[in-house]
Length: 93
Picture 1: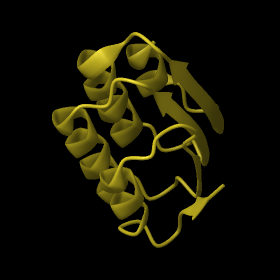
Picture 2: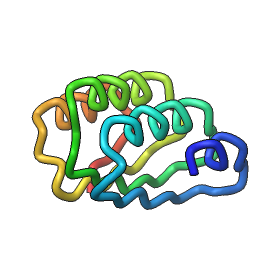
Picture 3: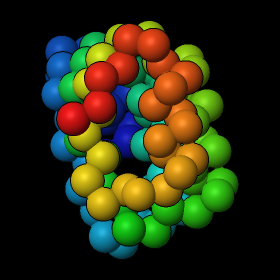
Picture 4: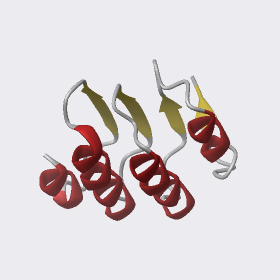
């Protein structure tokens, strides 16, 4: 899925809801969202956020300039709240 997301240039909204992809999924999706420049709305939910996964997601947030809306249900991590502040364009739902 992450590879397809890297190549898809017409998708503007993406809902990533998973309970089992773990750290590997977070790293792959973070890489894909760094490359993808068309998505403006992202729903992100993973119940297995790890420090490494959160760090990769935070790095993506610094580089992705097209993402303007993030919905992160269940992600109560203070790191996620902090990374929202790193992207001035982002509005949290």
